[in-house]
Length: 88
Image 1 (cartoon, rainbow, N blue to C red):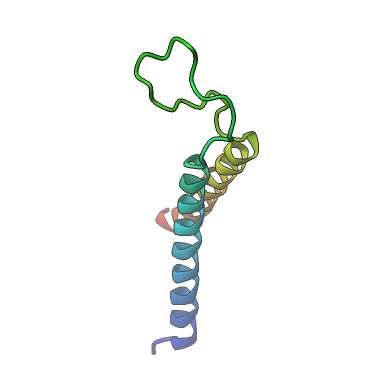
Image 2 (image 1 turned 60 degrees about the vertical axis):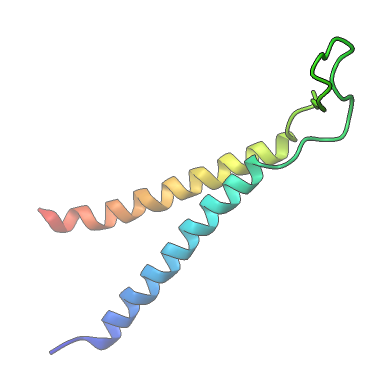
């Protein structure tokens, strides 16, 4: 006999985990693509005449991006940890 409630539970957890992983990776990449702060553009010796912002990405965006990637790694690690004991 098929345990339909168990099957639906596995389906729900799988969809939720897939959405969480996609959200964390997407948010981490978006935070790493955060534009730089407005500030001094280029140097006097900038021969290309392009707009080079020397201030860099905000520190909070970088830290939050790496937190998202760490949470993604933790989710993947927990998933592997849950599956491996059944292979013995």
